[in-house]
Image (cartoon, rainbow, N blue to C red; front, side, top):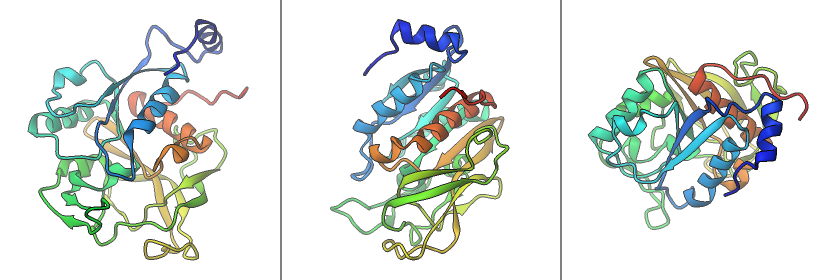
Length: 271
């Protein structure tokens, strides 16, 4: 993975984009995924995307079971890109307490269903989803949603516009009102009452697949308070192609900054 060159770092510092003395400390939680959301090619991209802004110091944790509060203490924000078995009481409580204490978490795409919700299936060997095991109820509260197993789906992956519906939210403020996604559009998600939607996309019924589009504006990015902390959930980020879209990159980096600090520096007008 490329590191910032000294010359590039100097340019960023001169532009006010690099705070080497006090970077935002990020831990990416990963190491397991289902067949359609491979983490090995995407997590290095997520890490490099954050590091190339000059605002973040990023580490990756691939062995999540056994994480304690001491493991998480040095960090400001977690990025959740993990689809796998429950993590055990100690690790799950450490993550809950981390966010509750006033820190942040950003959860991406495939984390919105699966074992944390008590669900199994969805792999080629087990195409039929089923309920299996107990859900991690605090995780559902953290990401502000539930997704009934009979409602899990999306139309065929396609390019679609995403609209910022809360243009004054720090994540969206100063950005164009619409950006393009090349991704799945998860639909029929049940949001918790305290989820605040900041971006939506129209689920076109003319697009086939997944039972057809709903003909409604579906939530794409939302924020959730959890204790004193902040969480952002996005349904974007199915794979590397989806993540390399400029709109995803802007939304992702700004979401990580906001969950960590409660604010976002203005966009660099020169770029």
